[in-house]
Image: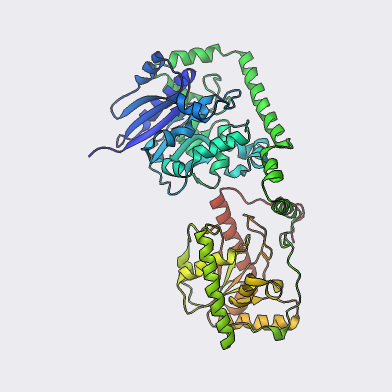
Length: 565
């Protein structure tokens, strides 16, 4: 039986081949022999003599192919920005999926690396629908000036910014998504000059990244919390090069492999001849890069500010700025958008539940209209549900329950409705608590849904609230479900879970029913059990925090000056 063949790509110019050779040698030394490997070196002008030297590394199961990308490079642009330690070769990784249409998946590795792990293990990682597999860019996480640049200019959280030096590429999805075309379009719109192609890739691939174990891209410029011997790929980023600095972190590992290649004499000579003047230049390069990041951040016309002024809707930009301000001020329970004018819901205007023929008919019509509407949203991809995790927790409920959910979009309740449908609990109805004004004052189609889709409106009238509380108790006692948004406010597109109010947990505690916490991006939900009010609130919040930090790969941090008590 033929072995699976793993395609691996490097990109370099003639001067960088000697470092590429060390990386390739380390890859070969540690790769599983259960697979074959084709190692492509993308270039525009590598001398034949240099190629012959690299080809000496070939051995059974490992072939090396030099591929000239000159025509492809010219077709994309003649004006790729180049600065300091970057060259045009840094952009070649963008062409892999389109240049090799026969490939479904490929690996790209920067030349300034040493591979200590079995590279087939990385390649065999299942990508699913993700465009790329990558590791977090630690420079963005650990250096505030770079992190601020990532968020303020590129528009990607410092915690969700990836380093493009090691990429597991879903070639099929890259082609389908038009990644190369998107790059050319963004290149024409704005010149990202700090991490260059990495900036473009992060902008284009935002929310389409499978996060890999950081050991697959251990950047020696940054701190890491494991022994370097555990690093599966060591990446000598920026000016941290063992061929320039004898005391470079992980340099001994680099030289252990380098001395077994024919590039060793040239590498050793480069280290020995590297001057103090050149090291001073490196310091200046790093200083310039920091200053450039700061300048780009402060530019009145940087990329994000251009979008805010000319592309994004003005009201949405204002809302996002208001969210930032409310978070700083700790005003989590306050809405950032004004509700429509409202009036008080009086006791004689509302019959909670679905009792009465007229109400049941209206409810049936409303649900039919709502389902048609939701299906239209899904068909039009205005509501995209990739996955429902933890549905077994919903299915296993055998009593009434309070369902909690984070709230960042008007369609959130539709998503939870679909989860309820998937749970297949036809004998238990699904109710949702809504605001007074949504029931009394919402006009048209949405108002019809608000008043008839098993909603439980709150009220500023004490008598109405007594009816509300009795209805909650009765519905939970009958085994039905009630959706409550315990954050109290809706912040548009806000990903973090906000501090919770205790009303939902009081309902659960007094009726001895469980709380089922749901957290949307369509993420995990779980059953909390029969707990005290504060315990349920805390466990709900901690679950949301755990899901947020796991799925978004960033710590939950509020920029709050005066936290809520």
